[in-house]
Length: 179
Image 1 (cartoon, rainbow, N blue to C red):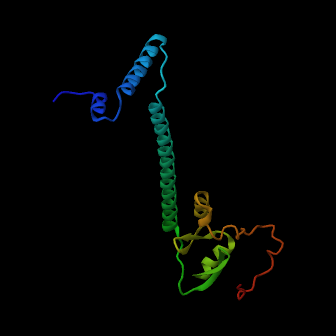
Image 2 (cartoon, rainbow, N blue to C red):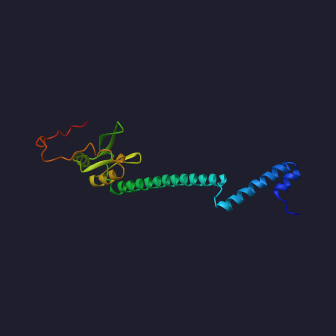
Image 3 (tube, helix red, strand yellow):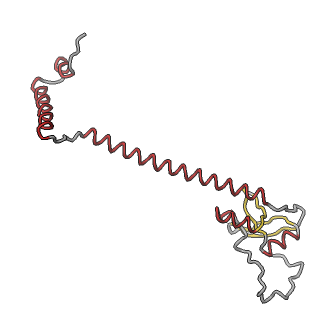
């Protein structure tokens, strides 16, 4: 089987005429001559469109990679916070008295013993969120957690450590006072 050009095949099939084929051939020949003579590059629309599509795809890929990196970083930070809480949480007493606090404009309660209650009130311990539960950690750990994600620290902003210049420091708080 002979190699017949596409132009000859189209002519044979009757899909084009001899004059159209001759016109296309001369047009192509003129472009080649002009390119050689003037050393001007004839703009190839297909190449330009392909290059634009390639640039758009690269930008899309870059944005997608950036998003994936941010998600991975957020997962890593969440893992660090969970590990900090798990390793440093203070023991709660499920049979102790409830300690009420607010989270997302709702009153929540955790059951703790009196010693842990005093640490929270004094500001040396802080309530933090671990998943759907609440834990109590020392203030130093809570500050590390707040650096990574302030949303996870629940009771830090409500607590102000007792200072020595407190005007009411000499007055005793009744033992049965609960809110």
